Structure formats: C-alpha cells, structure tokens
Length: 97
Image 1 (tube, rainbow, N blue to C red):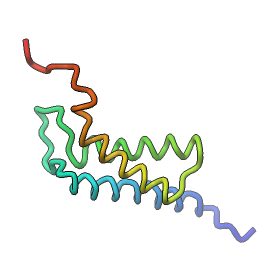
Image 2 (image 1 turned 45 degrees about the vertical axis):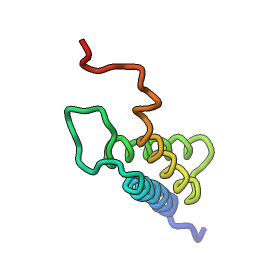
Image 3 (image 1 turned 180 degrees about the vertical axis):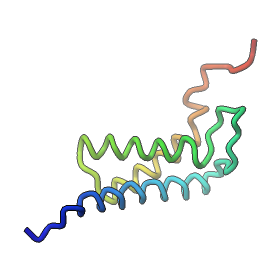
Image 4 (image 1 turned 90 degrees about the vertical axis):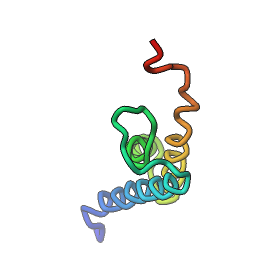
C-alpha cells in the first residue's frame, strides 16, 4: 500500500537512462566518432549506440526484468557492438559497382 504508482516507471527511466549514459561514455572511450556522417554506414556515438542500448534494455526488461547492473552491462555491450559492427557485418561492399 505504501507503493507509489509511478515508482516502476521511474525505476525504468533510471535503468534506461543509465544504459544510455554508459553506452555514450564507453563509446567515447572507444573513440567512436562524435559527428554523424550521413554518407557513411559507419557507427558513431549517437547512432546506433543509443538505439541498441534502448532496444536491448526493452528486450531484457520483457524477458528477465531490468535492474541497474543489467542496464550498465547493456550500455557496455551496445557500445562494443557499435564499435565493431562494421567488422561483424563486413560482407557487403557498398558502392563497388
């Protein structure tokens, strides 16, 4: 009865925000570019790092439940995935016709 109705929502905002902040900090430490290059598929700090973190947070929350430690781990994983996404998906040569 002492629960506030908005407490789960506030907790989720903290977890999602923590994942985004960690992913941006780790992305900057991994030297992901800060500037968005619209002519390239290369990853940067904002795109796709933040969106990968949000998607993974939503998936983990739906499947297992989300907490702050999982949010930090998800932020770290999303920054690493963004950094090495061109190495993982390198099978396509763009503009080589």
